[in-house]
Length: 486
Image 1 (cartoon, helix red, strand yellow):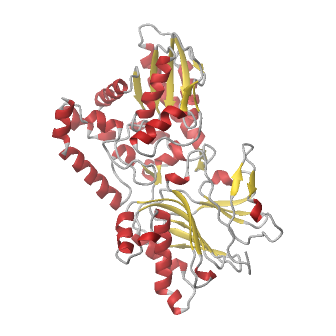
Image 2 (cartoon, rainbow, N blue to C red; image 1 turned 60 degrees about the horizontal axis):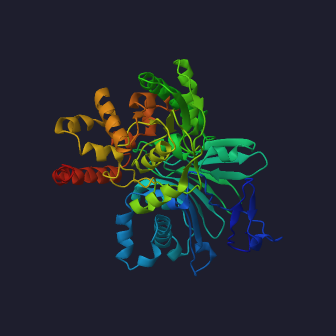
């Protein structure tokens, strides 16, 4: 706010999707010139790597910094170590604080100590060279200067719109602009857009040397992104629906092979599997398989069960899911989900459905097997927690070797993995989307996406080094694991 400095407020979203500002900020003087806001969505939560942080500096409002970001720093440990060496332990507890502190230190070293205004193009060029991970951020200083920054990896989207009525807006997804009129564009990886806090003018600048190949995280299209967000004119809903339809052909063949086909219900994993299930259900009729599209599983709260310790996840899973129908006798239920990560949620839901009388529970997964950890904001940090690797450790040596081809493994090896994972969660079958089908159904060319969850080919150097180290540790520990399972 011009001449009034930084103000903070809280907003609360009601069930009708309207937003109200905290009463403390509802006064006639609350007319911000520039603002950043952090919004939780169904799929993204603050604890998942989305954060809002500020740094208060007593030297003046020009050094009062705030940042709102969707982030995951893979080399956070190394960066944090540099601060710990200078006894700044209390100021770098989270990745958001760490990134903000890096920016502050760079501004202080090159500009503030000399009484100069920060050149943010230079600042973020240094930041982009130092960090490894997935970053999209809005940065605001005490003079009202706003910097929108997307790091070189391009894993997280960042959109901007110049509205017809004169506002310049930024958002992590373009669905935020659906009700507005204006020109939109995507901020390129390794770029900033600088908005002058006094004039309102904006410029875009590259802050990297162009040697890095940007790839959007595949989870954005499959899971994280809103269904209403689009990439190259294709909405995530359309992509997920088409994946479900392609998966339906494979599922139909397997269901038709059942000796005693019964009533088949197609249901989705709540909150995220709906578009996949819609596409799969539509395709079953084309293959002559009669089915009914009906949701039989519901959630009692929105908090994700992906993150946290094993005990924390089990507790949340047991409380989160419930079966909508108490009698599923003589039915085969097909549950459609975008991914199968650890298998603990799938196992719990399968048990609930079988307890309700389902004759069989089949899982249809809208992605290939997840074989790699994800250090870029998904909360998957080790290999041995993944369902694929839990099964892999129990396979004979030759089959282990064959399955290490990951997305290029032979169909019979994939079926073996599917069969073993199905047994581990008490399901009748699991059907993964074959990798070539995923490549053909993505809205961009495959090389434009980070497909590392399925290929083990990480999008950044630090990520690859960490994954390779993770794999070496798992393989080195294999003899002891085998003896335990034996």
